[in-house]
Length: 169
Image (cartoon, rainbow, N blue to C red; front, side, top):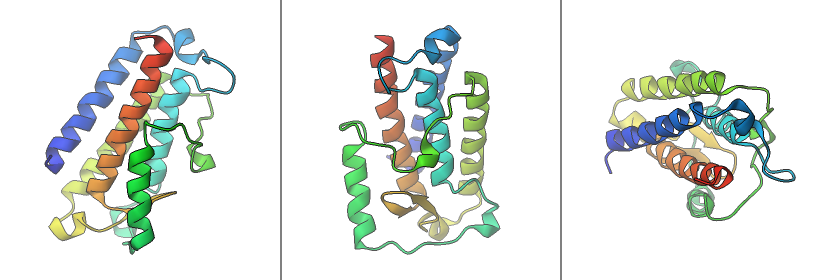
C-alpha cells in the first residue's frame, strides 16, 4: 500500500470511529466495562496521547532529530506489530495512560491536531527525509514515517476492536 493510501486508510477509520462514538451518550462512553479496564473514552484518550508521545510532542520540524536504528530496534518493531491487537499488554509508557478527564470533542480536536502536524511534516519532507527515523516508540525505538503510519493503523484497529467488544457492536 502506498504512503498516501495508508494515510487515507488511517483517516477514514479514525473518523468512522469518532463519528460512531459521537452519537453515543457520554455516560456510555465513560462507563468502565469491568475492574481496571478502560472505558471507551479512556481508550480514545490513550490513542491520542500515545500518538503524540510517538510524535515526540509535535516539535517544530527544525528541532527534529534523526535517530539511528539498530538490529534490536528492527526486531522490537516486528514484535510490537505482531502483538498489537493480538495480546493484551501493559501500556509501554506511563504517559500513554489516559487521565480520564477529557470529553470526545476535546479528544477529537487533539487527535486532529496530531494528524495535521503529521501531514504537514510529511509535506515538508523529501524522499530521503521520509525514510529518516525521527519518531520514537517506547518499545520499538526509532521509527520513520511509514512505520509510524503502519503502527498507527494497527493501534487504531486493535483499539477499535476493543471498543466494539465493549459496546457489543
